[in-house]
Amino acid sequence: MSEQKIPFVKFSVHGKPLREILRLHSKWLQGNGGEQAYIRGVTLSDMDLQKADLRRAILVGVNFLDANLSGTDFTESEIRGCDFRNAVLFKADFSSSDLSDNNFQRSLLAESNFSQAQANQVQFRDANMRDTRLYEVQMNSCDFFNANLNAAYFNHSVLTKCIFVDADLENSNFLRARLQSVRFTAAKLMDANLSSIQANDCDFRGAKLNSAKFSLANLCQNLFCYAEMPGCDLRESNLNSADFSGSSLQKSLFSEANTMSTDFRGSVLEGARGLTARQLSQSFTAMNTILPSGNRGPFVRGRRMELPVMP
Image (cartoon, rainbow, N blue to C red; front, side, top):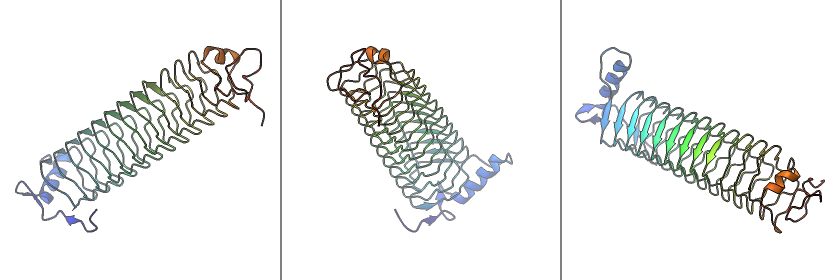
C-alpha cells in the first residue's frame, strides 16, 4: 500500500473535475439542483478520498486499489464491480447500500458499517473487518475466507452460501441470524453469540467454538464434526440429526435441547450438564463416546452415565 496518497482536487473523471462531481452531488443530496454522482470505469487507485460524501452515488467498475477512503459515506449507494483491494476504509459507511461483484480483498474495513446492506458475490478475503456492524444485512455468496471479523455484529442478518473458512469470528454476534448453506469450516468462533439462529445445511467442521452461545438455536442437520466446543451453551436448542461426531463438548450445557438422532459418536461429553437419560437414549453414542460421567459409551440407561463427573 502506498504511503503517500494522491489528492483528488485536480483529478478529472470523463473530462469533469472530480471535485466538481462531488460538489454537484452534494447539492443534489440537499435538493438544491446539482447532479447525482455517476462514476463508471475509472481508476481512482492511490487516491485520498477521506470522508467523501458519496451517499446514494452510483459507482460501476471503479478501481479504488490502495485508495484511502477512511470515513467515506456510501450510504444507500449502488456499487457494482468495483475494486477496493488493499484500500483503507476505516469507519466507512456502507449502510443500506447495494453491493454486487465487488472486491474488498485485504482491505482495512475496521469499525465500518454495512447495516441493512445487500451484498451479492462480494469478496472480503483476508480483509480486516474487526468491530464491523453488519446488522440486518442480506448477503449471498460472499467470501470472508481468513477475514478478521473479531467482534463483528451480524444480528438479524440473512446469509446464504457465504464462506467464513478460517475466519476470525471471536466475540462476534449472530443473534437471530438466518444462515443457509454457510461454511464456517475451521473458523474461530470463541465466545461468539449464535443464540436463536436459524441455521440450515451449515458446516462448522473443525471450528473453534469454545464457550460459544447457541441457546434456542435451530441447528437441525448441521455439521460440527471435530469441532472444539467446550463450555458451549446449547440449552433449548434443536440438535435434531446434527452431527457432533469427534467433537469436544466438555462441560457444555444441554438443558431441554432436542437431541433426536444427534450424532455424538466419538464426542467428548465429559462434565456436560443438562443431558438426561432420555436425551442420550435418543441420540447416537458409541464405544468412543465419552459420556458426562466420564465413562465410555455407548450410553446405557440405569447406569447414571448422564450425570456429569464431579470436579
